[in-house]
Length: 103
Image 1 (cartoon, helix red, strand yellow):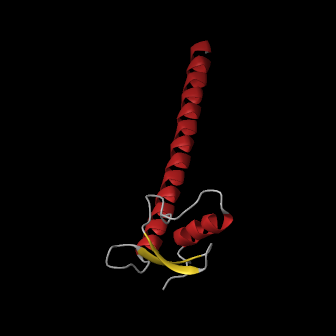
Image 2 (cartoon, rainbow, N blue to C red):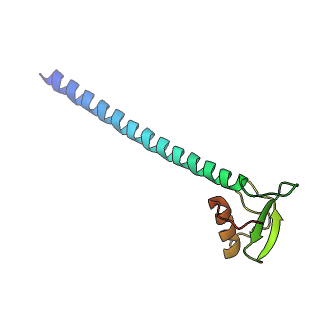
Image 3 (cartoon, rainbow, N blue to C red):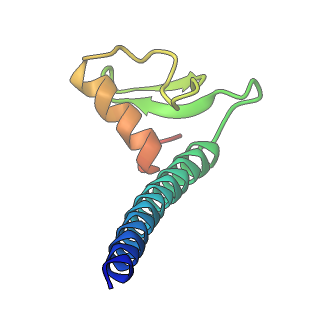
């Protein structure tokens, strides 16, 4: 009878571990899928911006309120981007969200 209880405890603990591992994998997979969806959406928004013959995005600069053609970096920020400046941060966010003013 003692062997049976030990076997039950062993099986229960192993099944519990397997369930916990499954939840961890399931959670991380969901997070990765959401990150991939967000990255796809940002790339789609950035690629849909009108561009000139040199491949620069035609945007309206929030900082200087002027039409500007700017290359986008790998994080979809215009080449004129200045980290920490509220207008530049807002501009980069608008590019990612697909709501930037263009010409």
